[in-house]
Image (cartoon, rainbow, N blue to C red; front, side):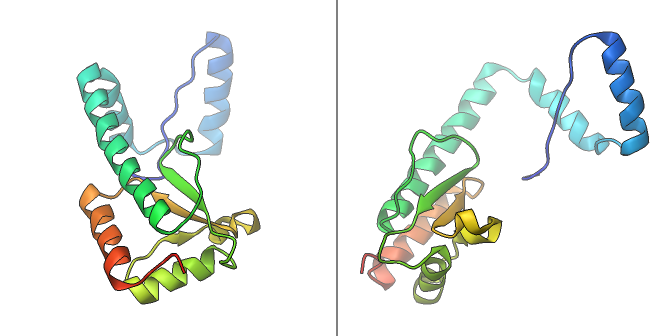
Length: 149
């Protein structure tokens, strides 16, 4: 469900009633299974969240290793489902780096420019893939071509 959003509103009952009346005329509401999944997730214990956070920390470490292999700079204190890396100065833009590693290493990494011109000097890697995918990409980068050229 990457890209799907869940939300909740709390506050004064009269204001919430007005917002709900307005929204009922503006959209059809959230997909019911997504609502049920969100409600279930909110009822899970802290252990579930701790385990999930550990999975994402492991994925993040692998993505940082990929960024390091590509000589991209990144902010290890950023948060979210994606890691953005600034491409090295000797590389024109994220498109050039993405093309290079795709054609030379069979690894696809999203060029930041597809999200707008402010992303031109960046690449973006999602944390939603399994660790094995990141490991395979890193192995391809190490064995098929020297990236830091």
